[in-house]
Amino acid sequence: MQDVPWDEETDSLITSIDAESGGSPTLRDLLLNPQKYMGRPGSSAILDKARTKVSSYFDALLESMQEDQQRFMQELESANSQYIRINQVIGDKALSMNVPFIKPSFVDVDKTVREDISVQQYSSQIEQLIGKLISASKYVADISTQYKNYSFGSWLFSADRVYVMTLEQPKSPVMYLENSRAVINETLDDIAAQYGSRS
Image 1 (cartoon, rainbow, N blue to C red):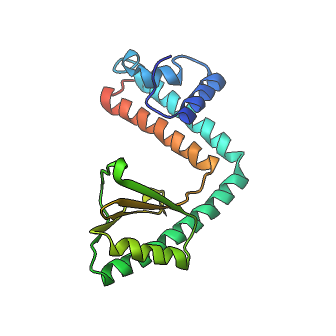
Image 2: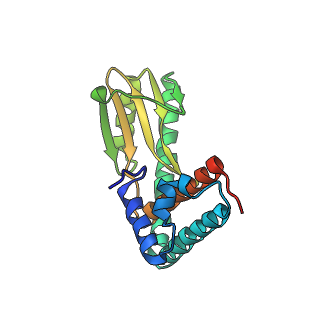
Image 3: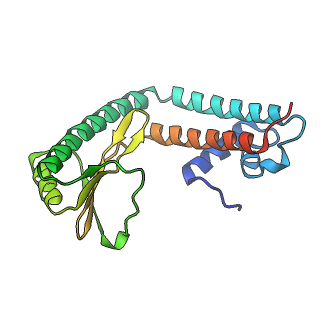
């Protein structure tokens, strides 16, 4: 089987889209072998058809998951409020201890000198831990990830040993579906940009 540039979840969804919609080319073949179909007459219609397939499939799937979506929104709100609270604590403590607190675009950490700490939510014990980590650090970095308008909290404390503290993220099937949808659509956008399309 051909290697694919996406995760297993996305691969499974692409298989489902092709099984439901049929037709030629399959979405899988278009994504993996765009040179077979693009840059020639009719390629614009092929891309439009693929986009419609993807949109219809995910719209129907998400429509059937209303309760999951509502629960996920509550989990996102909670995760974001935890991020804001802990980020404020870290910022205040770093400022008072004169330790730089940055928001880098990228950090490369040697995993052999890294220790990961996962926390569920803010507490006074977490605040004490933050104080100890900051006092031993050369700098602190907010390496949180964004999901839509929400932040999933993660912070790096650069001491002799690197510590990364991360808030547990919501694990919702809705997020996996939306991520897979984004991956597929971005790949279709890349194909359109690379090969162009002709009517």
